Each structure stands twice: as structure tokens, then as C-alpha cells.
Length: 58
Image (tube, rainbow, N blue to C red; front, side, top):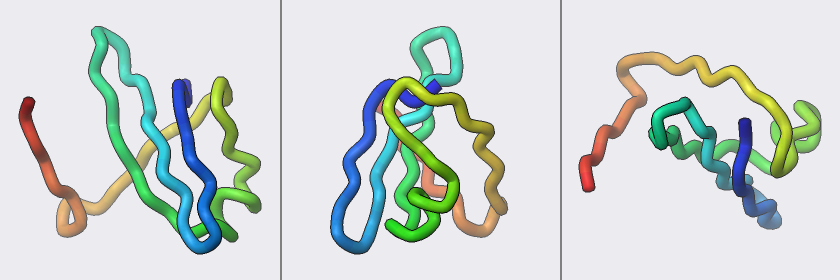
């Protein structure tokens, strides 16, 4: 599920809830977000290439 998102002029930032309180943060182009129909409260499946992953721990 997408608990929050922010649509900007060029990019779209979103959080994806993964269960257990874990989230995945993503930034994609504005056009891709519009094409996919992404919005807060919607559902999404996140796929990514290992070469483009940055992991952080709080």
C-alpha cells in the first residue's frame, strides 16, 4: 500500500508499506507516476535492480 506520496513537477516521491512497519521509499519520474495511476492509499508492487539500491538504517 502507498501510505504517502508527493507529486512534483518532474519527479514523484512515495513510500511503500511492506508490513511489520517496514517501508520502501522510491523516486520515479512524474510521467511514470501518472501513467501508473499511483496515489496515496493505492496498492503497488516494488521491483528493483540490485545495482540501483541504497539501503539506510535508522
